[in-house]
Length: 203
Image 1 (cartoon, rainbow, N blue to C red):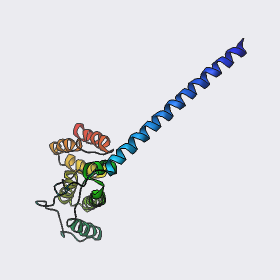
Image 2 (cartoon, one colour):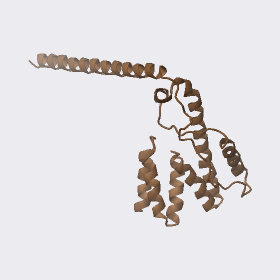
Image 3 (cartoon, helix red, strand yellow):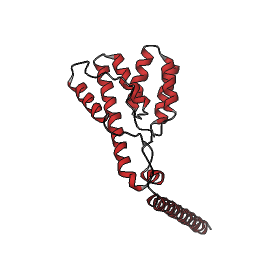
Image 4 (tube, rainbow, N blue to C red):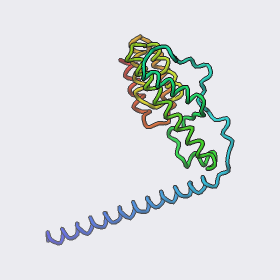
């Protein structure tokens, strides 16, 4: 009797596994079909005007150029000055398919370059701010890091150091403002950044 029960349970188990595998295969196929349908639609999208997108704007921004003698600071400053002459877009979290759907495949190369410029700018501002902090130039570090936050850099270290500097000076309202800005991030780091800022606010 036990032998037949074992066979029965084995058959049921194999049937369940087979069903789940078949269901997963169907879901995978549906996901692939949906992806390729969107990709085909994206590749057929007409070229759109991208001249009025939300490019990073340096006008009215005062950054601490040429104030201190330091090789790393100089490298960062030189890089930022070079990037000021380029088009920069924060396209974090937006896929190539979404970009093509929105603006047409003919704009993809330019948009990709704009996004790469943003990534380089965000990393450079982070390094610049960190180095200013290391050299005890606190206000200048805040200036650089605050600009990085204003353009929605998603580098967690940038947000954390700026929050730390505000917290040290007792400016909790600034951290609250940072939290509001962080809520607009389109990044996988958004949740971590929000949680970190909350700790500074309640701490």
